[in-house]
Length: 84
Image (cartoon, rainbow, N blue to C red; front, side, top):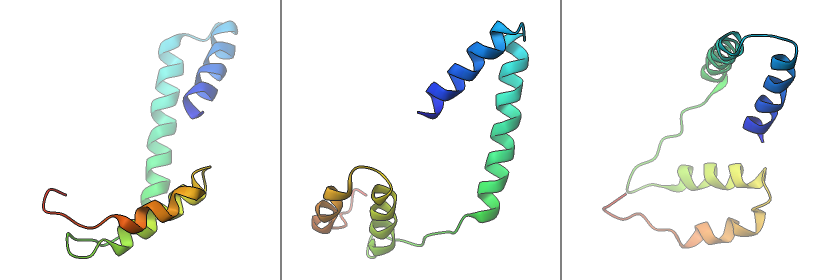
């Protein structure tokens, strides 16, 4: 969805005569700002092969904001394994 919105906005900018390089540079600058903000507000989630509870909770939270809520219980059967 984000990529589609960016392309849609790019088309409007191109129609106004803005050079594609300037548009791409703007995307790069916006990305840097977004990454900086995310670094500022993020939290580290500790997990290990022996303790995946935090990782599973994070995945469930992420899926909860999407249409995949019915899949939450599917994570309950995931167990750590040596190849992880």
